[in-house]
Image (spheres, one colour):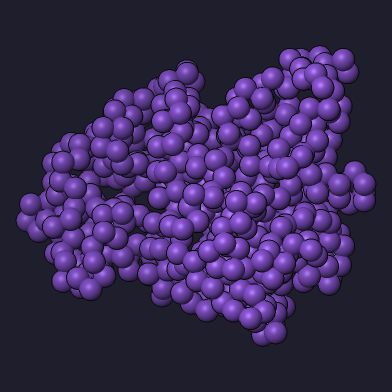
Length: 506
């Protein structure tokens, strides 16, 4: 059979498929105006030459979550949140939560928060449908995206899934086949970003997303090799698997056994596309939800948009969800932040290895945007930040980080002024049994450069890149021992999103 060629499709083929970036999310299939793309074995395949119907169309590449197109438009959806950090993006609140339904909690390791929220939304007509991943009857480990129309159908999809799912294609079915207009979607970061791009592109299936619930994601796996490994190594048949989840190790539960698989044993089965992904917490979602391990039956919930926050608090008020702040659980906050930083660093490293461009290439975007080139550091810096004493302990530092949701602080030495900067990454490297006695001053980075008011933003990229850290200190020129504020990558991204407007007190 001859290979089908298409100039339109070649953008997606060369920039995404040939580089192994496809995650099988279904965004290209869902948006193809000619219906030329179909997913087979979790990859899009061209059915016929689409140029005969639509000349010079590159939508499949533009909406792909792994392309660099439309990214700032996607960030704009969440950028009005009052808080942001370099690890998890924009947010309003970070909570620990679980379903108030004890029976439902027992069915999953994460407290059934997602299932309870979706069920409540459908039962109360907030959503008219929800996109979930069901388990195939003959192969429970294999996810099958479906359109849930009742809360019973939502409950039947409970449990974590770790293999590719064409979630965005199912969203398209909900809109075009079922005529739904208030669709809730649950997906991993690539699904969420694909759906945001559909909105940014103003596609005909846009405008029907009632809620985007993103799941924390370390990566998905190639199913056949992974299942073969579990069968040969642990004598587990795919049909026997009831549930899989991460809890320190990778847990596989069957009717007869609970098998703990070391994470290092399954790394080889990670999909190639996941190696380049830098998003752990689904930063473009309305609500992001992930494991609260080691707390039993608990999830971490990140509220990002106003609609996500309003919906979640309504569910709390109705007694559907129990929730509390994460501030009292500094270790959980640290674990989430470090997992996000590791994924971001790994994704950037792998992308650079392949000669690609790291997503959100701030320097190139700023240099090419003339109106932004005149913005100065004092226009976007975060002023009046907490300065931590060099004599504080690492334990005290981590507690402060969890309380203020920051991952970096200036360090001040008594009588000498500014000493350096300390990050969560540095603090997390200290053994847990030594954190009460280790002083912040002993781990602070003292070699950092500082910037002064009046300097243009385009000039601070050298400081950031040379230090390999996402923040710089703005120093007081009249007082060399004092600091005026801090500038982070999130401040720069906020600048891009808001154009030439100066940073407001969000």
